[in-house]
Length: 321
Image (tube, rainbow, N blue to C red; front, side):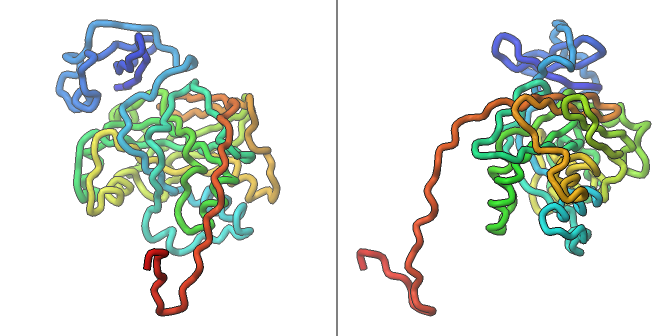
């Protein structure tokens, strides 16, 4: 099954996509209830609309949260090389799948414009596949985790590399460098539709990314260092995952500019500019596309006020003391 969404009379409506049409669900229907139902057809409103993923389409499912992992060794090595000059992956990377949380309010659909982040001069894309949680679970094992999957979609983790580089020197994960947009789409594909691509828990899906119709790179999703079930198990360790939680695979090998900059030793291909269109295709899921446009004005924030440091062992007194 393929789930998509459209904006109809200002309201987001979800539906089942088949070929060139979308069969809308009842407006009050919960997408995740539909996916879990024995008879999803009972939720159809009997209203059909044309569907063309080359047009602008909305985010295919409701998004509750977004975790983004880093699970491809080639991407990890190349990206490290672009930052540190060395492609040696630290041992800690292999010990557990690392991720960061990004902004669910910045999720956009295929075809929507991507504003240049304020202050950014080094914009990049990241080609990924995301798994979406369809059923709540707590502290799941890898054996249990896959039963909580709603489906898969393409994810583009837009990245302001210059902003990201500055803020990560503080010792925390990326924030404003990833805050402007995350593309999800064009549809959510349920696991049964991809079963013939599955190999020992991984999916052998060809992944490709293009800038202005020129292929930049790509990989197969089968090169993930962990399976999606293992990522879900780790994400749920000691906590809940709930319907609408999105977990990105991390960028595939050759799936972003930063990795290529690391291998080439220079900004080649160049960072994205206003008017550039990024297109991503994943076998069995479809294609997404977005064009970079002018962003909002940069409102300056002053640097920190420097506090007078107290002598060691002496508490600093407030002005009122």
